[in-house]
Amino acid sequence: MFELALYAAIIVTIFALVDPIGTLPFFVSLTDPFNDKERRVVLQRAVVTLVVVLTTFALIGRFLFVAFGFTLAAFEVAGGILLFLVAYDMLRGEVTRTKLTPADSEDTSSREEVGIVPLGIPLLAGPGAISTVMIYEGNAGGDPWVIVATFVAIGVSTTLTYIIFRYGQRILRSLGRVGVMAMTRVLGLVLAAVGVQFVANGILGLFPGL
Image (cartoon, rainbow, N blue to C red):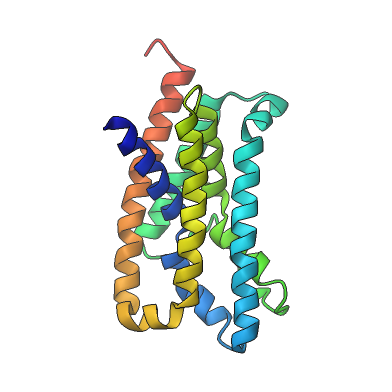
């Protein structure tokens, strides 16, 4: 039962960090001047960028720890703080500042590139999602199911992102701005708890005598 809860938590956490629901209004606004064909191209590039970036960091994350000489515990503390900042912005109903800068939001001139930047990176595959898949992979140890759950979470998040963006106009009409904000805040609360847990685990790893 504990293992199933852990695997479910991995999926929910990564989906919450990708946050396609909170990013949906930005996607709809950004692609509003585009025709249907151009909008589909942007959507395809965004989800491909998302899955490639998260999968790459999930695969090479543990090697980066060795290459840069930092411990997983230190990365957990840093990642937990980052998650809490993301969650704080989500609880306030804002697009997190760790994902989007003013330069990102203004640079929308190329219709061929907006699916990659800023939609794919950093709005969907942002620093929080990247650091989280690295932490889960680093913590997997001898449990192959944690690794499987991480990649399943990436696949589920990518699939749901595609569906949510594909039917974005209908979803926004159904939920309304209030509904989108409410769901974003719920996901933000989940992320805040995960961020605190990451920091706690990291501190215990850095100071095992506590």
